[in-house]
Length: 583
Image (cartoon, rainbow, N blue to C red; front, side, top):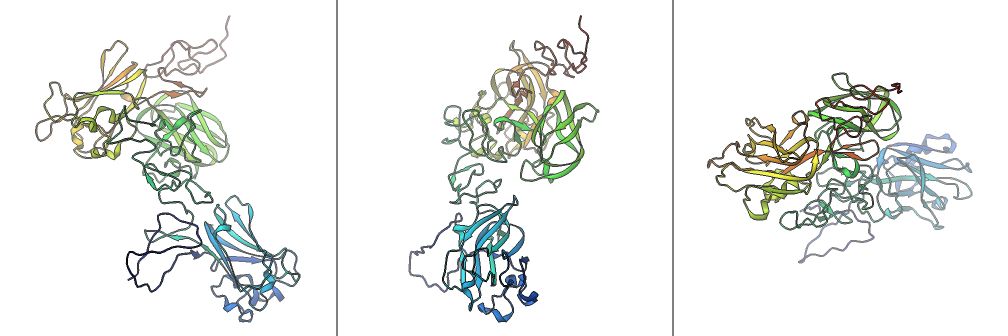
């Protein structure tokens, strides 16, 4: 029977060693070397011998090398002593080239000696990849993978500047081999990285190693499974054994300890996260979006004249990032016609700060002219609960469902048995179960997101959210209606956030629905408390929602974020009106 074996990762080698655990009858061993992506593609050459169609450039991609016999009229031939002779093939798309095989004319095979092979990469640059140094007669020339470039290629060129004195390029077939088979019975023609490598890289290394792995994998070839990102733990992470976990839970690759910035090229953050250290939630992200500018990837783009971004509720907005390919003029407004920003943005990643703090369910963005946009990201605050001190009323199973599992930076996909969710003990508790997190400092809370368990989801119905202020007064922030049938998460948005600063957040289960045994159980897979807005000096403000021209002593924690006292020279509710005469 036939059997296809897929290697764990692509390798570049001169031999393969096969060994069997018993004697084995083998009919044939075939090793995939790629498919010919040059076949019947568009070609050109510097000249054609006698202007005859018998020797035209497309003869080298017609699928037949005529057994190296020139007079079968399926080989190319340029004019005698032509200046700078060449032959090229446009591949029609970008490919990761594996090798190039040239079928030569047999009776004049020495004519090709000294040829060079060039390619054109995605940047449009022409690169020399091979220089022939042979002086012998050869029917076949196979330029192997060791010469192939690490970039994607869309054109292959054979030049004859240094060939025989007749300056003739005379070939019978050129095969450009690319594409490897994948397990899903399709061909992979652009990536040769291991299967767990992150897909945001264009260039390979010489040893085919991966620049950055998908979440949960590590090693040069992403073949070592990590429990989660770059955090080591045994039977679940806890506040005590988190090892080298950091606040940079959402970096796709490593980060510089000097400034805490994620270092992966292009997509530095996991989809849904943004900003310095990938610590800020991106309110614009849509996991299933077909809109390229909202899909969490900087590898996709679209042409936009205007776009409306809908949020999952009403959120406090103060800044966003537009990743664009041109400079342009942009206007950003809310449905209430409040202007967040009107002005110029630069090419690349441009941070836009609103004129004042807004609370809105959507933003309308319009450009003066069509803009190529890779991504639009809207700051929704930093998770200030990450790895903070937690407590809960009871623990169902020792450390496996301890309260710190809800602030470990991973929602475990809602699976309790991934050892990253909390769970109170299944018994009657006097005032119902509870869970809380001590934030360590007082914050102006922007929103709270709770990742629910993916089984028995209704158990969270009826929870209440409280905050402790600086006097330790317990204030009710939100009461869950308690009528949901199934939900993977609950995002308590900015519309319910009060005007107080809180140092502790409490999830109270006194009015939770009861299970079939008449017990109330509180199970949380992650609790993210979002606060802190980015400021124009690249710092943070975690307690105030004041506009930039408001006096620093103010907090502006009212519903409209208006300023009671503006800086000298400014006036208006948001201190946006200048040129006040001072005497």
